Amino acid sequence: MQHQFQIQVSPEIAQDNEQLKKYIAKKESLDLEEIEHVEILKRSIDARQRNVKINLRINVYLTEEYLESEIEIPHYNDVSKSKEVIVIGAGPAGLFAALKLIEKGLKPILLERGKDVKERRRDLAAITKFHIVDEDSNYCFGEGGAGTYSDGKLYTRSKKRGDVNRILNLLIAHGAPKDIGVDAHPHIGTNKLPKIIAAIRKTIINYGGVVKFETRVTDILIKSSAVTGVKIQNGDIINSTKIILATGHSARDIFELLYRKGIEIEAKPFALGVRVEHSQQLIDSIQYHCETRSEYLPAAPYGIVKQVKNRGVYSFCMCPGGVIAPCATSPGEVVTNGWSPSKRDQPTSNSGIVVELKLEDFAKYSDKGPLAGVEFQKEIEQKAWRLGGETQKVPAQRLADFTQGKLSTDIPKTSYMPGTTSTELGEVLPPFIHETLQKGFEQFGKSMHGYMTNEAVVHAPESRTSSPVRIPRDYKTLEHTQIKGLYPCGEGAGYAGGIISAAIDGEKCAEQIGLKIR
Image (cartoon, rainbow, N blue to C red; front, side):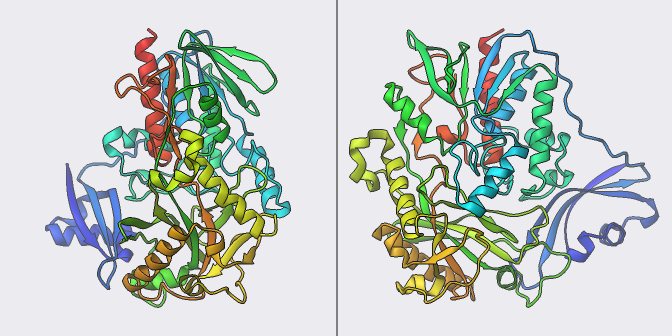
């Protein structure tokens, strides 16, 4: 017999199965000897009160043996001789689109401009150590996309868009920890994600799909307003009447290609700001109301939203126990992002703090049409590179100094490995962003007592929060509104905002293609 309960317990009880059994037996007047197993279905942290609690939804097995079920890779049929569909980009949208195509009996030809997850590491090291940016292999481009080496957060608010649990289960089947199916804010970690991504690639190949690395698409071939294939950088042509375009939010060359060919794209609002780093101990003390975090609690995250002069200022991609990474995709620019290992055990925490942008903010670049937001990004990133000494050193400022517009006399060592250059960040950011962030940080300090400290360091810019363009598509068929057979997909097309939502969007595009090709 099984019974479900919703309970709230201390962190100590939540992590000890025997204590959990005793607690539930007493609370629900059950016979302790009859409890065979307590299965945790969902888990979240409630840190609103001084004594932190853990919310659990549990399934209690009474006088019934608990048999743990394994989540396995689905059995697909071989598609090696099936109709081919080109998928451009091996991020979450592209990878999960490829799996869904195989499920539908179609053969994905997955084209990735970057390298596989193992080879990518060398290019990431080159950015950190030698300030060398490979335009095809970096933190944004390569197998797994931007999420692989920038954290692997799986939380999404997009539950209405599709089956989140299905995506989580596919990740678990490919080696992700089962906890991602339980935790309210699941996270895999940059140290574990590469093996999972490689396992997904293996599945695609095992069932007849094709995966090509270092294969950058340079043209999308069109005849009579319908796709016929693509041209890659060596001049070869790959033919297909169906193309899923899943290139990510930083594929500026693809945006420029579409614009140049007269394929409709639209400018889209996004957010831009800075990345701030605190000691994790400080964030723990603020969030958990304690001097030292309990061994039973994870490194504390935070999320905060304020309004400054009708603009949202908010935390983005917060990385507890994590580090700041150099995420430029071209030489001559500086871009920051953050990530955490699976244990979130680094001594620092960081978060993007960004300002909501509006289309009118890009008016200066109106001559660039739908690429106005791209040009806005570029100008800030290139200015940061120049102010950083034309290296990957990031312009930085102590937090209190930032709010006061005061140049920091020195910058303490941060987790950003290429190094920092003390800069008054008003030189990097447009005045309206700079001033909005200054007031936003002041409001943050009032809500999170202790947050406003000059020991925290602000790094600029955090500029790749989402795509600055949207590639329009029919809301039912998901085909481009102008070009038949072209399926704009995921973050780069403006239809997703993270690993899970991008994966769901990839599946949806593949599903629509499956309906067209029977």
